[in-house]
Image 1 (cartoon, rainbow, N blue to C red):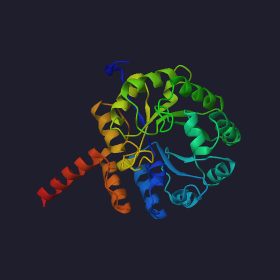
Image 2: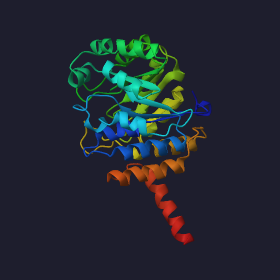
Image 3: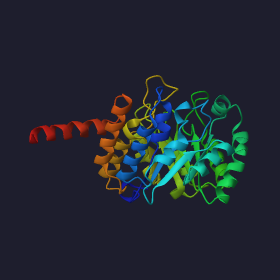
Length: 311
């Protein structure tokens, strides 16, 4: 696909409230999480990953998932997703009236063994009852594939391994499948290779790109994925979320940076960039961490200058 044939519209899935905040060491108050999700909904996101129903023993930051889901103001047309690792999590998601449940697997055997102490095949078998229950309940089912562009333990991940996991998740009935560069080592050439291969076994309009910016390649990789025809991307407001495998490194690509890229390419998202910039400022201040979005920082400085000159 040439630059002149990029997708006309892109769905941006905001993952900050879940994938971003779960890495924060200090507890984030439930009302802050609710305010963050409500601000994101108001900015126009069609899909917000709100929380996860996992054991508080493993992810204490997400222990208030039910309270968060009960407290948000739901915007009609917005999908509120939750991560569900097992049937107990699924039951929590149903009780919380989630619109979509997310299951996850790794493309790397080494990562699967280190993270969840089982093989890729075993991990996907564990999700079969969750997938069946989601379908029976009429819920959207999303599958996420971590380490699709590299693994912290085994290094390179064969493209065939990613394709194999896509096929397995498709067989479970996933409506969407995320190709995730969990440690941010991907490059544009590899991104296109993986996306093109996955698109041969699953509809390209239902594949998404989830890029981390550890090596500063995320926006370049998103552009490469756009050239492959991908039209769904995940990002995190203010770049929330670290990378546990690279000390001090940034995690998820910042939503503001992705929106600025898409805006510059003339691609519609239906999202108000300035509202997202203010939301990034809100959450960064609320949790006392630097804003990791370059676009967010630049636009905030510009807005402050403009406000100062009118006073």
